[in-house]
Length: 227
Image (cartoon, rainbow, N blue to C red; front, side, top):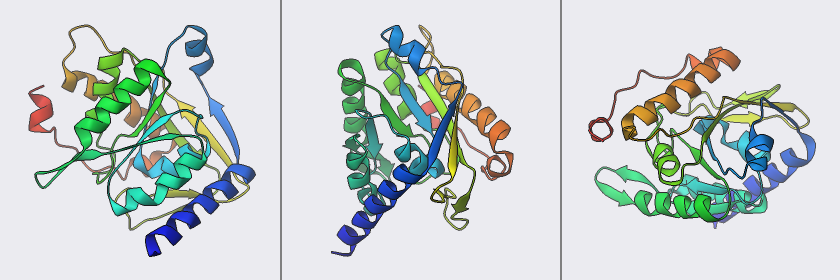
């Protein structure tokens, strides 16, 4: 019952923010990509998920963890017109449906529309780009669209691992795109993942340097390095 109430509150918050916040995109490549028949995969930080939901594109497949926290945003995503795909990477050796979720995202991008992944979720560390977003892009040929959102007025959950950002109602949210990143023939998964990470980190450093400085040093996953 408590989870249901919290979920309804999140829906109400997202509806309020979608109706009161102004969203302005910078260097948006989507019109050109659509004109040329290209689909794409949104890549963003977990801390920016509320801003991304507010400015979401209807028909986007969004990957959400099977955790209780993930459950809280499912209804809000559906209200925003997104297709929810549940799953996340293994935790302590226990499968969380991550591979199945990636396969569903691949199918969606190949047949329907864009996908969106909080690349350092669901448990971080902050700024660590996991390999799922690169897998979807390599399987479909769809370019990665890294995006950093910065509300003009915001509240930041400073004790949360991701430093979740909550836009204040009636503020302006600026969404900054990096140039599209395309998979290259024969490129190793880890090399592609690193290109995505480098682009996203450079974008956040340029747009929001104080928050970018909060990223922890990253360690390359052994499984990814061997890919």
